[in-house]
Image (tube, rainbow, N blue to C red; front, top):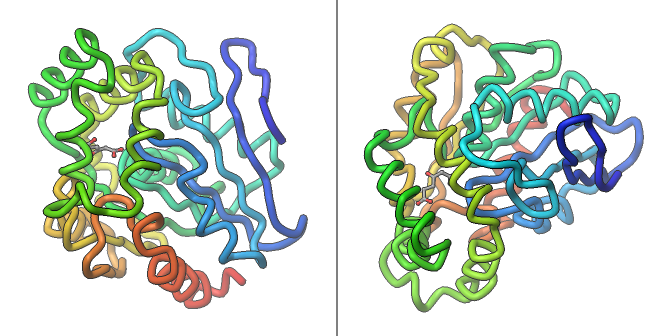
Length: 261
Ligand SMILES: O=C(O)CCC(=O)CC(=O)O
């Protein structure tokens, strides 16, 4: 798979792993792209993995902002249909985790289990997102880059080996795409629908994450009956990049625990 042409936009997606292996879908966060998952894909060779660039990100088209959360959910639904994938474990990071929650509520037939990574039923407050959107409209991604990277990685962020790569990924995001997806986060509150979900769920948080701190992630995990919570010490908002071994171990344990192997 590469660019998939839909009537209204093109979405970039990649499929890897054996054809008939248990399916996994990877959904990235705001201001990143599907390359975020390279370390995980390399460490999970036994699964059929679908990952996509959210609209406005990576090599997908960037239609004018704002985007509705429903549109982002529909994008995943239709890319999964193209890939012939159902009953997948959907792993979503931050906004990707919001999309996973919305997809499970709308299409439980597509979602066998969820990994809600560094995410919540609601992230931040609308006025805060609006201020960031205005900053990006005026000055591009550069205007919010330092503050964002500090929230992602916590104290000592300037010295992290991953910093140049992640700053480049953030700055490569089309401003229209970032603003569009940020508006979707600002408009989303999944507390009630997520509290109605009963499916195998693992929530993952990082102790240094200032964007979606552990308590926020734990609160959302607590909405879902029987969910599990895993804290990755020393990791921030992007644990799959910062600690790919620990992150993939958590994922693998979860997949094995639900027999998705
Ligand atoms: O960019 C930030 O600092 C926060 C991002 C966020 O919470 C949503 C996301 O990463 O998808």
